[in-house]
Length: 240
Image (cartoon, rainbow, N blue to C red):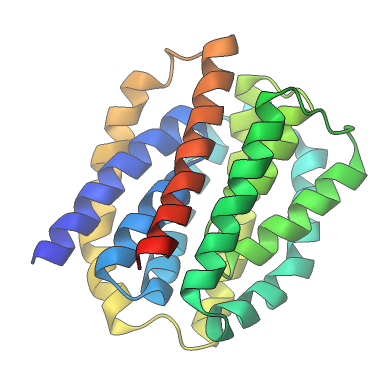
């Protein structure tokens, strides 16, 4: 029962952040859920819950969606996803989590200091391949796309809409891969029953926050969230 309460609380917080920022659901939820569940269960659960969230966000923000960028990233993701699925089943969880945390922190520091990546297919493809690999290995597929889209100057509405579209495609493909490999277990199903109502509650809370962050405040919030998620991953790996 305690484990299910922890999962529910994590879902509420993560869903609120996702609606407000356009990303952050997996970054917040997976480290918390992985404390009380097997890391593989956490990744599959967050992927399953994330699909309806990103579907709703893609629909509601569709007017601001950059379709070309979304399709380029989604297509590139398909290259990285098989590699990520292999890593999920074979790599040590602690080493993988530590590496991800360090990478996120380094890239966040660069972005904070004014990193600018050239807009266009090269940046989008690189981010897509990396994000796809992370989607099926750790579930934390957001940072490469966040860094690429923020660094190339997307405004808040376009940023959130395009991220949602990318996450939706990646989530559907990743969950299909997990199901094909027998990773959608009874444990995932039980946790999902608790997680979905909590996600609805968190989404409603996030609706109240989503109109309050613009311009510099929005960019600062994105960077702070990335830094916190990277630090959380490193701390979790070192104390495991």
